[in-house]
Amino acid sequence: MNIFEENTEIYDLWFDSHKILYHNEIKLLKNFIKAEKFGLEIGVGTGRFASKLGTKIGVDTSLKMLKIAKERGIEIIQARGEKLPFPDCVFDYVSIIVTICFVEDPQCVLNEAYRVINNNGNLFIAIIEKNSEYGKYYLKIKNENPFYKYANFFTIKEIEAMAESAGFIITDYAQTLFFPPGKEVEEEWKMGYGEGSFVLITGKKFKK
Image (cartoon, rainbow, N blue to C red; front, side, top):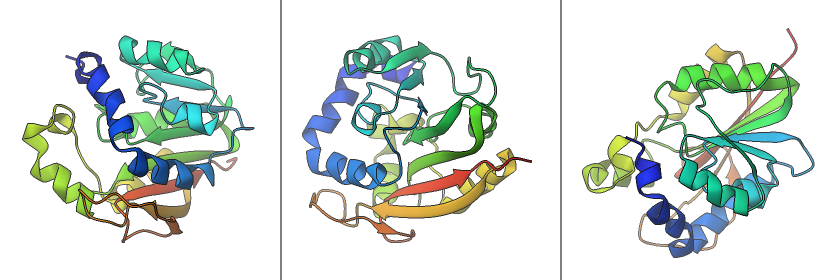
């Protein structure tokens, strides 16, 4: 069963219903993910992030979502993050935005991301941190939500450990969504983690 294939419209409408949250997340991501670089998004969904960030290529398992991403200008490929259909060292960066919690084998996905990134290229993982206000809220309503019912939330340290095991060096953290669930306010992002619910972890692949 592909929950995203079955709930594509619900997923895509979330971004229209929560425009301020979406804008806050994009505002943070744009400071790190540069449109002029050749990038891949794993779990591109309907292209809501890739289309705003200039990410050229997106993979996903849901064909319905990929069709919408294509309409938003993304070059799409139906594939799993655990088995990327690309040769080694082809992308300047790989982004995984609020997706790692849904994949079957997150360590395998990060290993594959490392493989396809150029030497000195970058990894961008954005998560809703498990112990944050939104993380706790989503865990509380887990069984009532068609998506989060199947999610496995992570702490920063857990993501760090998997990324480092794949070969990446962690370089930065940035955060936003400082207000509790139910309160949407335009806000500025800041470096670090521990306050905001939406956290970006950046890593680098150095030539061995």
